[in-house]
Length: 378
Image (cartoon, rainbow, N blue to C red; front, top):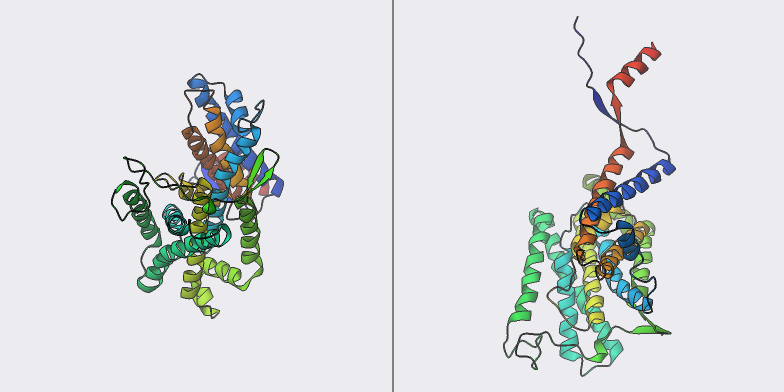
């Protein structure tokens, strides 16, 4: 009787893997990604060691203005951290919120509207509070609308949130390019369409430490990180999110109101992203058509690289922020490199980390080794 030959390579699921080996896989993946990035740099005549040094130290070494680099890093890190945390809430529920860009813009627009309308008539604290609450409510409704359509009409949340990104973007561009008497977003002092600068009362407060100015949005971001952890791990709502993410049918069988959970979680996710937009526009002191800096897309990568782990999101957000801001600092010494190199390296790292994930969960078994094991067993 003819025996069917086993395939030369088989993919077999691992029973378990030692935590240290898992860490080793991820470290190897990151080193491999940096090596590939280094080869690309060499091919265009750039010393990878020098560029990586400048990039990962954000240009602080040997600089008299190192504190400025840290201030700049915070402006990149805070919106990315909050956005990534917010996206992890909906992702844990397996509700694919791809609308971070649009929700960030709507939050920034709402905060800017309050700043421009009431900036001259309100003191700083109530004005900032109103700005941030407005940002959360506007973005929460914007994202909650998608959840409402999903629970009511079974629409695809991925497609809906993706399309709403462009609606928000072109709404921002409309206000930034339409010169008309009613458009209070634009400055009256410029012939070209230019966004009006906020009054001083709408500026994000800072804590001065010597020459360094600490943007207090960083303190709020850290507090949000801790709050999201406790919300997911220690509250009934967080438990419900996990159950719905594992199986919506199981949640229904347990008596949970799945529709309510989806609406509540998506509103919270979008509201936090809107808050990040409010924080950013208050720190920038003016609107801009490029205000998001692709934070909605990068937040998706951060959330998945972190396996939706709250404190891992903090670390990965910091790493990505260092890469993005550090690439800008390094580009001053290397004319052939711009900030887009950070995006390229980010994509390479993501690819290798996904490969590491595969080898953590599975192993490759070759035919000869399989036959040898079979013979020994006989």
